[in-house]
Amino acid sequence: MKEKLEQIKADALSKIENSDTLEKLNEIRVNFLGKKGELTAVLKSMKDVAPEERPKVGQMVNETREEIEKVLEKHISQMEKALREAKMKTEVIDVTLPAKKNNVGHRHPNTIALEEVERIFIGMGYEVVEGPEVEKDYYNFEALNIPKDHPARDEQDTFYITEDIVLRTQTSPVQVREMEKGKLPIRMIAPGRVFRSDEVDATHSPSFHQIEGLVIDKNITFADLKGTLAEFARELFGEETKVKFRPHHFPFTEPSAEMDVTCFKCGGSGCRFCKGSGWIEILGCGMVHPNVLNMSGIDPEEYSGFAFGVGLERIALLKYEIDDMRLLYENDIRFLKQF
Image 1 (cartoon, rainbow, N blue to C red):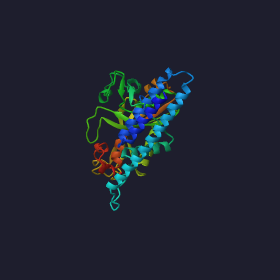
Image 2 (image 1 turned 120 degrees about the vertical axis):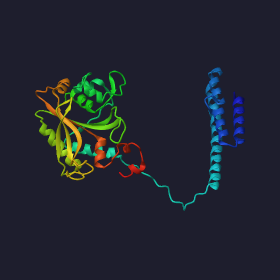
Image 3 (image 1 turned 45 degrees about the vertical axis):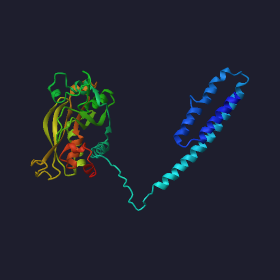
Image 4 (image 1 turned 180 degrees about the horizontal axis):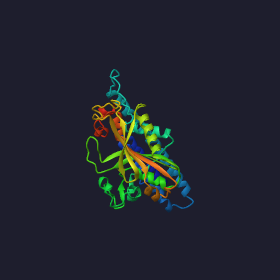
């Protein structure tokens, strides 16, 4: 066994001395020291050695390995140093050249708008809650008073994974999940990405972002809704902003309304931005429908609440006077660096 180890060592050292590339040295490492190398093969044959001789043979194998590794590392280090010196001689750095500019990114206009909305509502005592984008049909539609045959589904029914699983069309399911927990009162906003069967144009996209809000407590009235959203509009668009509510219909709220804000470009006098009306539609809202409260296990005789929903992209488009929603997603540096 001793003669065999001496032969392996001599063979390895000879090949190391005659190697002229790092690749060859690496091959030697694998062939002699690797899992299938010659020294490993010797260790595997230890079962054929007498038990009293095994410690001695094991020590000899380890000593041989250490000697090979020592010489191998020395040659690798010398070769790397020589290669580095040769490279430095051939590569000349011109220190008079201007340095490369380090381009640092920043927040997307959608993110800036979202953080501002979150700041406003957190300041009013709301919490930010998130939920799954792939949602059950029950939470996305039925628990929101939109049964299978409801015409409101025609505008939203899309992107089904299975008959009962759908990419959410609104962030309202997050509100239902919170109501089902039974921890009252509730003051929350639910931002997130939603999906609908819209055609791509300057103001629509099949994938966009929504921020929905919900308040559930005792003695909540439409006056609370109006006061909350009026304060939100003033914080977002300026102290002089006024709001106007127009009757509307949403299956999950009753009564329901669309809310307009005075044009922050002309102050309500009428301009191209507001198409001469002096008002800009901003969000939908209403008092939570008793059926929705019942389905979530909340007694509508004891509790009431209001909900609202606003498109995040719409806020960004209005606030930064962007005339095409597609600009937000085209990743054009010339556009994004303005923010």
